Every structure is written in C-alpha cells, then in structure tokens.
Image 1: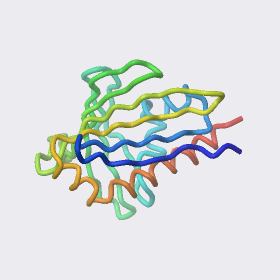
Image 2: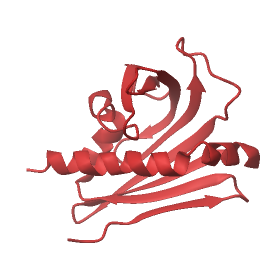
Image 3: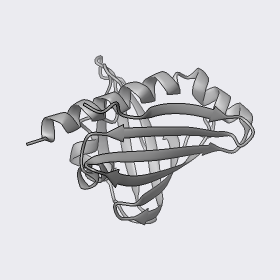
Length: 166
C-alpha cells in the first residue's frame, strides 16, 4: 500500500493555509465527494459532529448552506458561495460562518478556498489553498481548532472513500 500524501502548512506572509491530501480513489469519486450534497453530509465534519446540508445549488454564484451538528443537536451554520467551477479540475468558494437564516456572521472571518484536483494511477490529490484577508483572521481560524478539525474531516473522507471501492 502506498503512503498517501498529507501535509498542512500555514503561510503567515500570504495569510494562506495550504493542505495537500491524496486519496486512494479515482478523481471522479473524490470530485463527487466535494460537490454532491448526499456525499458531503457523510464526511464534512469532524466526529462527533455531523454535517447537514440545508440547501445547495452547485453552480457558479450558487451556494451551500449547511450546519455542523453536535450530538446534542446544537447547530453551527456556514455558507459556501461557489465562485468558480471547472469540473473535476478546480473548485473555488467563499466560506463564511452564518446564522440559522443564512445571514453571514461578520464576527468571524470569511475565507477564500481553492481546490485543485489531479489523478495519478488511481490516486487523487486535492491541493487546497485557504486564503484569509489578514493575519489575525488566519490566527483566529487556527485557534478555533481548524487544523485538528479539518484533519479529522479529511480522515472521514478517506474512510468513506474506502467503503465505495468495489
């Protein structure tokens, strides 16, 4: 079994988090995992939280409104506004915390996400760049446990993808 790439780096000079992760799955399956509501809700949250999409319109200008739900039922809302989609190659969105009515919470930073997908011999690499407006925004995000939470979330995807294999 090949060792799959996973690295997480913070560049404070550009206010960007870089995450590179390989998955032992075909590109089309990994793309679907990032772009289809019914698959996203199976992995887009670190345990014990779960993801619950309230609505999703996957197109440029569209958005995904979802909650991360605690075992006690408490919901923490976010909005992803899709800004660019190149199927099975590149995906960009703006990510913001929100309230239950989809209003953006200005107390928390908005970040720009760019995901690049590539495949080599059945292994798919997702290169993620998460840009923040200022250093204090990225520091807040990291202090909120983003590295640990996103690592757990990507591990959830890895586990899920292994169940899809034939």
